[in-house]
Length: 434
Ligand code: SF4
Image (cartoon, rainbow, N blue to C red; front, side):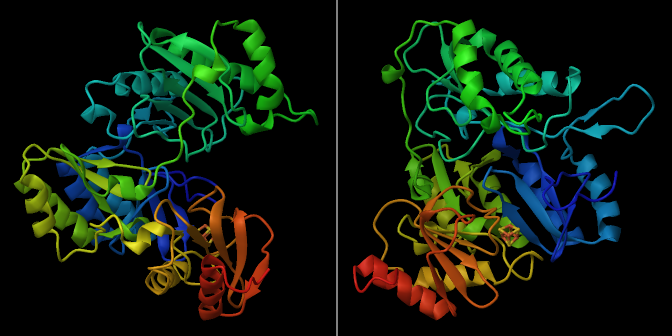
């Protein structure tokens, strides 16, 4: 281990981050597939070494919370013995092994969808090149790449510096390549060119400069002027109007038996207790499932082989705190962990989110996430705009309509109750507060 991550860095397995409830460790699980023995090992690790709380992040990673420095020293060999630390990179100079930080996110459930292009080999080849090949300068730990299979589960709600989307009906298979911040693709490439193209894009990004002459940290800072240059040097014959423009999914779309071979379990506000994960492990084992699938919608998916598996799974987990129903009002909200687990939080957002979900359960429009509640303006749980965003203040909450947590609030409420009343008025079309 090299120490603890500072605020603003991304925690990893070997470099956890300090939080209000102890050290926070993020596990990188390639392809979002969690073999059942690993799920059990994570639950046991969280129970034995942490405070039992596990997060499913908005990018589909698992986080173990509440470690102490002493228990951190013990959890690392436990995770290593259970093959839960991403393969390390040899420095070749006798220095300690470096942990590989996964940067490539692929479509969840891709490996459950044999009719679509298999993305795991492409992602693995790209990860290897990213970590092994020398680059001009280090990449920001937040720099990320998404590869989508063009199937129904698009990742339009997640930002990525580079994105590749498989094009339906193209033979041989092709991908559209995108820079973050630019709506139209910058290239259309055959599948076998994806890895070299991604590396060329990366090198072009690393050689680029912002208008002020500084090196950019993220693609969005330079994509506006890079995109035309890239297109000019990679001329292609395509009609941008023919390309798909996916709309973000509602998490409710993945709850229950949303397809014949898969059952989705919502995690309230992205959290699961180790005991519930152990119960899920037992229930999934009983129906002979081999793995759990992690999704960036705070939903865990269990593959099914028989029609009756869904009923058996639901019955076995009925006492656990999963979301089983698509109309569950908690699916309308997203919340960060809040106080006291995060030292930046000014209010207990996770607890308040439960209160809001219950109070406004009949008010929300039918579809999509409606309200983001954030303990501070950083907005970790949902960096994008939401119809309603509540940002904690020293007393009460500020409310932002159709904006992000970083935006200036349009109204302030001194208490949670008054904030709920204000939102209800807005949803009912009563007297406006702004
Ligand atoms: S958004 Fe929430 S979790 Fe993130 S730093 Fe602020 S209070 Fe902490």
